[in-house]
Image 1 (cartoon, rainbow, N blue to C red):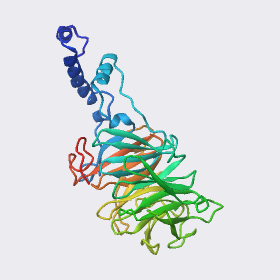
Image 2: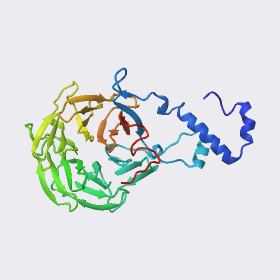
Image 3: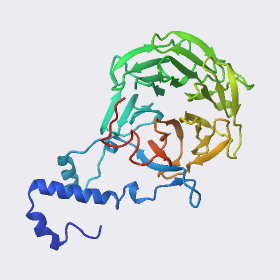
Image 4: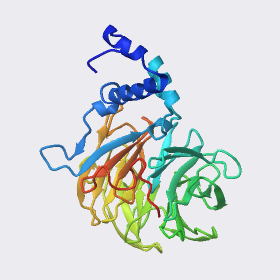
Length: 376
């Protein structure tokens, strides 16, 4: 930073300061250190595609612990300033899926047996599903409806649990006898229907999507069966509902995306096994934006690929890496796109969620701005 606090020429000024002034000065120095020490802000934030091509997607930030969103108290900041300690917080254990409602980022954690919420506009960090009723065992797929209600698929209990936006338990539905290996979940914006992805297994024929009435919890019907023909699924992983109302399913064992109408009628599919762009190796997470573009995370590729609604590849974002960093992945999993078009990508190995911004959205626009809470 060009100077040290131990330099003699600065000590008289520091010694003459009152404690409130010391706190203020420490915050100034701390804010400077953010840009010149171990923080990622010193690293050039990647853009996609790389220059000289016109940027379409910007890496924006990473969420790893409560310290990434909670506002630090003056006393805590002063203590760190004096001791030289780095700020710490409640970190992720093994994140799996992600969903977002108006700047509140919900992440399921299979190791810590809870869902955490990073509320960036309000500077809050919440832990959900840690106590009965509504205690979680192995939360995996999750999604929010238009009101911010949170739906969580618990793979161990083989049920769906519903919480309000603040984590209050509301109800559960589903039956362990219905599922083989429930892993993914999506709900329509109106909160009418919930689609639960049942991954199945080698000795199971339950490779399908189960549909429930979101309010009553009544089981309605199932979509698809095990196979490799159009409309059939093999080890499905995740699902999302596009702006067209159709259901987009990651057909993991067939290395493709399958598209169904809300009633489960097959419409089309795209993808296939391979190492080239537009193909898949281990597809996992999926999301769609308001324009109908489809985003698919691939665990083996260490990236997510963006397709138009016709299945044509537009762009690939991120790469595999053995060292953590912006847009570097070892074990990517869940993915979602929020109301403003920001993309969120989970990496289980590096225990993080990376956030990206589309080029048509300015950094100070949308819900994901500290202190800028919008009303529904």
